[in-house]
Amino acid sequence: MATDPLPLAQALIRCASVTPADAGAQDVLAQALEAQGFRVWRLPFGETPNLFARRGTAGPHFCFAGHTDVVPGGDGWDGDPFGGEVRDGMLHGRGACDMKGAVAAFVAAAADHQGPGSISLLITGDEEGPATDGTVRVLHWMETQGHIPDFCLVGEPTNPARLGEVIKIGRRGSLNALLTVHGTQGHAAYPQRADNPVHRLVRALGALTAAPLDAGTEWFEPSSLQVTSVDVGNPATNVIPGTACARLNIRFNDRHTGAGLDAWLRAALAQHAERFELEVSVSGEAFLTAPGPAVDRLAAAVAEAAGIAPRLDTGGGTSDARFIARHCPVAEFGLVGATMHQANERVPVAELRNLARIYGAVLAAFA
Image (cartoon, rainbow, N blue to C red; front, side, top):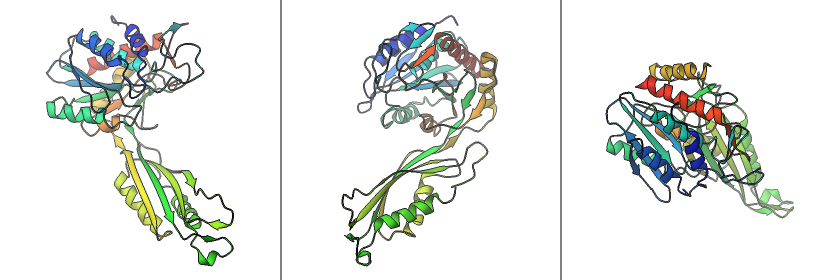
């Protein structure tokens, strides 16, 4: 690589851009991109800073996607979480792995790429937050302006232990539910005069968790329903409460949709509770970029540059790729994520430079 990603990574880390603050991070990024001939659009929505940049107008159009916001520094650091220091060959700082390091590698790879077509960056400032005014709204703007790419690569840290191990080609969906079961309050010594909502809730939860949702699919592990909280809030030992609540999370594969699971939950609950309320929110649907020519090209470029054949995977939580998948093929590849969100988050400088080199190979493969 002729262009070193380290200085830009350090400059980004030194901006304490804890969601929703930007702290100058996107100014730093915009200046670096404009110096390379990118046209930069600043796209704030609500309190969220966002940036879209593109160099070139012809196809094929390849997009890098990521975020400049980070989680709080927290306690337990050996140095300044926003110092961007290099010690013993390691770049330290909040965002080094997730994902200011990858954003700097995007820029370094683009600087050294001279092929045809066009390159863009979609960068948000709320990936670590509610994700309502970031990537999803920038994508809508991109669609109206004719900037939807032919392929998008998200720079989330995908590798467990070694750079080049894993490319993510999909993610499970995520559904959260708040269940409130209503009964009739009464004296515990006279249960015939009451309707115990706790008993109804326990039976309902037992039915929901009695059997797996499915056995998995070709590219996804089995869906998982987890009870994350049960709350009654009853300080008395001799009173049957009037209500009982529970929270659920379902991580679901591509055999399901959020709407389908919502309907299934309501039908199952109705068998055990005559009166209940269910509030459901779906933070993302399951998606898959099916293996084919584009994924094969990506995997081959990573394998050649990293010296290891990557495994295609769909595990982990959600990412902004769930929004991008509605518009174009998308995959994820980034740094080793062993220290992301931890105290003393860090990445080997050599690994950061290797990631920029791999991104350069990917750009060449898609040109």
